[in-house]
Amino acid sequence: MVSLFVAAFAFQQAATRQAPPAETVLWKSVEPSVVALVRNGETVGVAALIHDSGLFLAHSSAVGRPGVQTPGKQVRGRLASGTETNFLVVTSDEQTQLTLLRALYWEPGTRRVLKVSGHPATPNVELLAVTVAGPKSGEFVADGRAGLMRPSLRYVPLSEVRMEGTDEHLGGAFVFDSKGDIVGVLGAALATEEMQKSVSDQAAGFGGGGLSGAVRNALNTFGPGNQTVAYALGREVLQRVVAGFVSPSHEVQHPTIGIFFKSNPGGRGVLVESVMSGSPSAIAGIHAGDVITQVDGQAVNSPIELAALLFRKNVGESVKVQYSRGERTSVTDVKVVSGHDELRR
Amino acid sequence: MKNKRIEDILRDAFGELDGDLGKMTEAERTEHEKARLICEGLRSLAAVPEHQLSNERLHSAILASMTPAERAEHEQALRIREGLLALRDVPECQLSNERLQDAILSSAVQSRRSPSWALAGAVACTALVIVAYQMFFSPGTGASPVVREDAVPVPFEQPISEPLFAKATESSDPVEAVRNEVRAELNRPPAAAADGVRLSGEPSYRSDARPLDPYLMQPVSFDAETAVEVEGIVVVDSGTTTRNGAYMATELASYGEVVIGG
Image 1 (cartoon, rainbow over the protein chains, first blue to last red):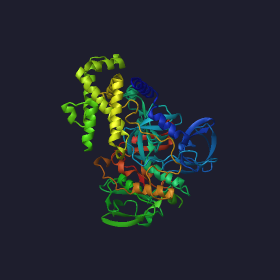
Image 2 (spheres, rainbow over the protein chains, first blue to last red; image 1 turned 45 degrees about the horizontal axis):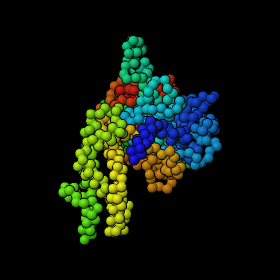
Image 3 (cartoon, each protein chain N blue to C red; image 1 turned 135 degrees about the vertical axis):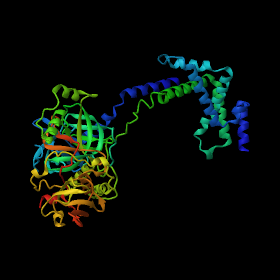
Image 4 (cartoon, rainbow over the protein chains, first blue to last red; image 1 turned 90 degrees about the vertical axis):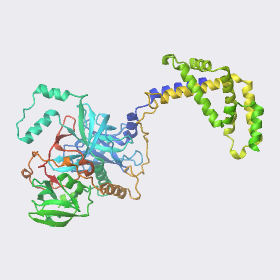
């Protein structure tokens, strides 16, 4: 019995030494469903299987020139088994810069379909990012960062993720939680201090300069180690995009009422900057210069709040918008339409 | 009547039990014995450096810690335990007096034949308990060394026919199910705005410098629930890539003049 115990103990010790890290197990579980996109023999991005029929999700930056994706274009991808196959660009969602690819030759039922997580990620939890260079550990920092896409001025909800190192290729990387569900697609990385300073100076109307090189270097190297702050398209918007991509039309329906707005310097509410001609807001009688104070009975105090309310609406619904014009306050019903339809007007 | 017969059988097999031990239930006696042995073993091992802790030393330490009376008591408890263990696999409905008697007597005979095996078994059990205690519950480790505290089992393969998203839905149409899930997420009431969210400051660029074209009029979506918790805004320039191959992001502390489409 003693020897049995000793044998069991020795086995346990051996198991301890050989137990694979959780990240490795996680990577092995998603690897068969991830494709490396290659161009001229070089890996330029990754794509993830989102439908058993061979539909893959990728970030547009991995498919072609930023912001330019041509439906019908063919890209080449390499499976985990080493097999290479061709993919067709089906469509792209300009608001999120995500692209839908279809494998030209695909056998259904051979790979696990990757799902978008149904649960919010927990801050300070380790994540697995699948980058061009392979799997990489990351840390989830915060959800719900307000993102604004330039030059289109469109909002996207972002999740902040920290990655070790500064020179890794992160563009279009997929981020997975411990269950192997997608929690984000890395769309952007924070610019370096120099770039940040330049942008800030530019925004403030200065010509650059600022910190000396030595001070800047000290600031850059201060801290526990070099890290890259990356921003991922969050799970909520990913769910919407994936739902649209796998639908028969492959169209993503982002709700809109056709206005641009900003903070009201005069006080409460949100100032309407412009109204798109023929949009639901124009039809409802909203003009540039109006101040929106309520939507569906809920007070609106900042552009963020208004954008948030609109994000939660469904295409086809109507919203009750209360706005002020001079001394007069009015309430009007505005139909929520799909941004895709609006764009095609 | 049955209890009386069992007591008679036990008395025939093992003689009179001592007072306190006799009043205990079998489970209590086993627990009592386990606890006492662990305490004794740990007490005797306290002075031994960890790197010198072999199984032989453990065995010797535990034996040395026992008085002759304790050893006898220990052996007696072991015999009872073995008898009861032998009965564990017998369904209650099949527990006849004869079976009970046979089981106890056979275990008693066995232990009389080879008392050294009983002692070795006791020592091994004790050693197992002590080492398990040290491995799993000793201060500083906190958790099993084999399974990480934060490790979550990951399914290697999931049925392809599963719904697209992790959360289950009742709809049979996968596309409709996904839409329902998105609707459910989106229809949650928005969180109250934090005071710090309403920012004002220098514009990053002026809206009137931009032509109003259909491209700009694309819709807006925004994660309202958590965005209000974070100040500032992240501007993503999709025309510029960083050395990481990702679009360049810039954090702006204020966005008072920033125009948003929606």
